[in-house]
Image (tube, rainbow, N blue to C red; front, side, top):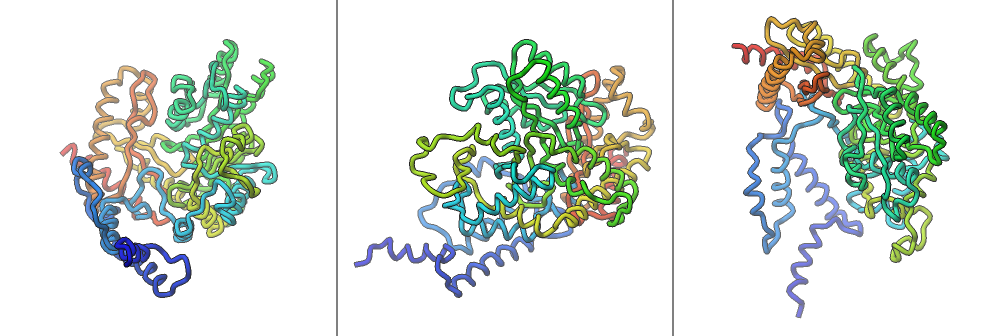
Length: 546
């Protein structure tokens, strides 16, 4: 007599892709995916979101429980598609929301293939040729940013925060040898600018240094680290016997595409090593999770401009190149392919100029007795992750091969060109002012003002004159109202999706400056999408003022 579970097992087996080629079942799998895609497609409209946005009932969600019997693949698919309703469509020409790009077809295929066969990149025994794909990506990207591929090393990790965590951890091991084994028993700090990503606090906390060990350095009007302030603050730490665990250099921020002077910061680091006769060299990590892609312009012919970018765009690209060209000076670099590499989440790589740095976090074999007995590539012996998926690697590799250097130049050039065009439109209106006019990236921060305000002078007054505190606060609230109107209109299919930052930067007297933010990362954004933004912003002003 057949056990009852055997009858159920046959049906359950059909819900898996078959391990041995089966044309009929393979066709069923492909059609299941196609049905899901067709169902999602019905949610598309002129709006930059899928379906409708409805209030999210978290209380009801907490009532969920596992049912006794399962559902069919078709029923599950329908439910999964329902969770997509309300999502922003990142590739929509009216989507200019934060730093989320549309993934390419090739990158999605890469994720699908890796998901189908579920490799674990911790060991080449479990990943085989995908281990080669990771090494290829490390070499390809190292060469792009100016590292020597034969000397460089790196791993894909869990996001931009993960890349900075690796950089800071290696730096901590250099400053306090043996911290991996014995812990941190003395003062160690992390330096980063006030415009750097807030993950600096999270990283310091997870490393056991504590968020208070982060020393935030002031920035200039272009959101770049004040190098002289860094010099004095670092000297103060060293004079009292403290250690510098890491110096995080920002190479393209999320909010304003700030670019620190990497060469100057490295020079200060080297001077301090000599001055204090340090037995270690403080680790410089370049947070280039967005800015790395501008490396494709390192050898672009700006004089002849073969791709025909407009003069203002060409100037912005050339300006970014001056900063990005020096990435090879950093000891490590963080790269997000799921940002300016047009791959789906998560696809992040941390690169080290010297792969021997990874030996500082290498664990002994006896700690992992049931793994790594053979094979030649075993990154799991030093990564923080035991399990690492292959989807992000294949997605990144797919896009690097799909675009080539010229393709990336075209896309980066286009999004910068559209950003420059938006700034031109905003600067041509007497009610709007661009806060990062001289910035080289695809993000535009701007403020909207009521009628009668001198927008040529107000930005400087609000930033530096304490007598304008109440005016700044009032205009902050005004811009929040503008954003709320523009956002609601976008959700109804009338306008573009923007972002809001509650603190673009702080005024000289300590007040946050609110800004509307357009972050263009879609190749589908065009002149019409730019005009829609300006129209909706002015419409919002008219609605607010009556």
